[in-house]
Amino acid sequence: MDPVGETPTEPVDYAAISATYGALLGTLVLAARQRGDEPVRPAEFVPLGVAAFALTKVVSREKIETWVRRPFVEEEEGGRPKGRRLRFAVGELLTCTRCMGAWSALGLTALRVTRPRESRVVTTALATSAVNDFLFAAFAWLCAGSDTTERAAEPPQSPAAATSSGLRPARSG
Image (cartoon, rainbow, N blue to C red; front, side, top):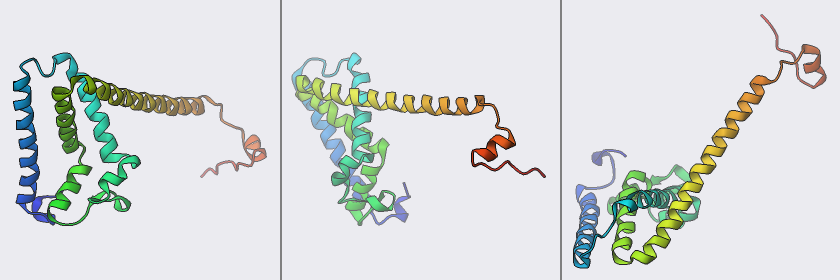
C-alpha cells in the first residue's frame, strides 16, 4: 500500500473507515455483554479464523466477487484501487487481504454473537472451503514435485534417439 501522501486520499478517508470498524466492534461488544454468556468459545477460534481466511480470499481475490470490488478496484490493471478519497480507500481495503481479514473476522464474530446457530453453518461452509483450497494447493505441489522427480529419473536420451524423436541434440562448445 502506498503512503497516504502518494494516494488520492486524505487522512479523514481512512479515519472514516477506522471509525466505522470501531463503531461496529463497539456495538458487537455491547451485544456480547447483553447476551451474558461466553460469546465465542476458545475452541471456535480456529474454525472462525479459517472461515475468515476463506471469506477474505473470496472477497479480495476471486473472480466470483468481482461485482463487489468493481466500483472500487480496476480489475484489468492488476487490482489497483480507483477513484479518489473514500472510494480509493475502500478499494485499498478490498485489495488488502490483511485488512479484509480483520473485517471478515468482525463480520463472522458478529454473526456468531448474534446468531450462533446460523454462524456455525456459515463458519463450517467457509472453513471447509478453506481446507479444500489447502488440499488442492498441496495436491498441486505434490504433482509438480512428482513431475520434476520423474523427469530427473528418466535416463538421458542418446543423440540418435533425440534426433528420431524430433529433438536435436545439444551442441557442445
